[in-house]
Image (cartoon, rainbow, N blue to C red):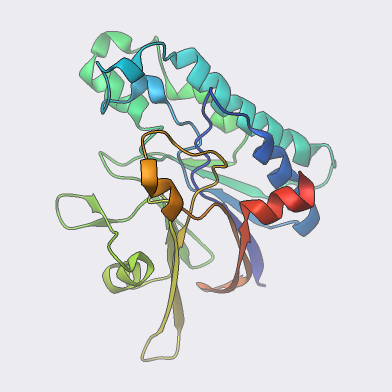
Length: 253
């Protein structure tokens, strides 16, 4: 039996920005009733643990607890909206992105933080049936109904994210299966057919962020903002629908 998947790409809950989009998304989930919801990672932006701008003026005033509270607030708004319907919940999967992985990196570089900060702070098991952590220094991968999901997929022994000018096509040429990721915040889609007639799909799902990131500058213009709905999912094949943030806000905001 085919299923409906809903993919949430990179929400980046940030203490300086509201999480109203989580309520809009919860209402969408109530309307379309997906069988599976996949949060592709980076729900928590975690600016307080950024290693890129530590020591700069912009780093001053960041707070770990505020970062965690922003991520938990996003999940509360999303799943609180869904649970109000008192209907059967979808199967919920959360993958760790590189921003959640900042917790592990911080503990590794400053062992005295162990016990003071933890993935448990994000309360992920309260919201998701399955949590997929990093494996070493690369995102974990999960297969659902023939589609492989990861925050990003790696290329080569250095473990760098697959990207490039045509990232969805690159996913197919390197992974050889239907696969979906987030991470680079653009939207891209590619379809290929195997010699046996099987359709495989590469999907880069964009970003579920309705604010501009100050660090990204002009790159904000390149990002596609919204969620991806996959209908008729079976053995890696599906019919994709891309629901933009603007459409979501117009319908539910």
